[in-house]
Image 1 (cartoon, rainbow over the protein chains, first blue to last red):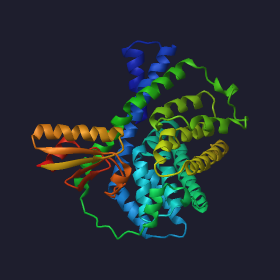
Image 2: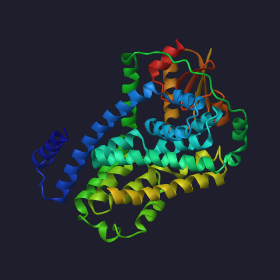
Image 3: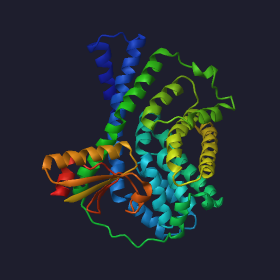
Image 4: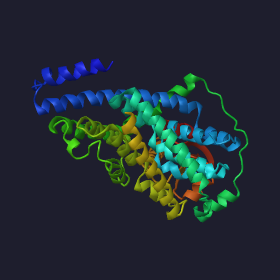
Length: 324
Length: 77
């Protein structure tokens, strides 16, 4: 299927526009057209598939399930997995957090969800498939879920409840398991318009990030020589991963804007593992998110939360470099 | 008169919802009061997990996504 897009890009740039194949401009433009079309197509496809899953497992049902079931530790893995399939919006992280606490879901399980939700999301997955292939995507999603699970377990063990802000502690004191939820039955055809609308909305909301990200990527693709970064950030430099992650945490963008640039960095010699760790730092943790969480947690708790996740991302960076 | 509340801490989607609500009111000509609720403690009283949320006469109608102009018009009708 992607061959067809490549053929179209070749035809458009080299024949219709008549730009020489060997030129920097031709190479950049071809890359831009091919990548943009491919990514937009994948974005719509994946958000649509995730939309179907979400329609059957909406967040209210997930909370209800986690609130009513104690699963001997498995709830951490479940929460992280649910976090991955739930579309993330940073402005929903606070209501989600409170809602989970209110339902009597342990703090660690809530963190497991909160860690994976921005880290592994439908936009990141769609773009990952397009840029690094299915195998890398599975490793990425799998390690993101693992990271959330272990991170949640660890944070849960630390007894951090006393660092929640006062009114959240009040909520915690009144927390109770929920009643079983009444689910309204809808046929697939009834759900379809909302699902399609939603995925169209997501594609629209990241559209300019994709265009700008791929645009910058395309310029770098055409103008920076292959292997350029290798001389600075090589596989043998043990500090490359932590430096990349620590640089990434304060940056704020979504996967749509970062991934096209990451792809080019990899083509130009940065190890894939280091690049993924960088991306996880950008999308998984951000200053705006910390500011929002300030309403429900003390600065100390946010620092512990960010610290633990940062360390875990650095570890996974090393791990990726070993396996990929 | 109907009271419409938009719950959300001021992100892009919340603003889009507000715009759609105002558009729907203008188009249908129904008298309605629009209130934006940005305080998180106030929002949590409605027991929602995702924002934006559209509340019509204290009943949660749409949550976690932007309500379209058509949807709002139907809810007001």
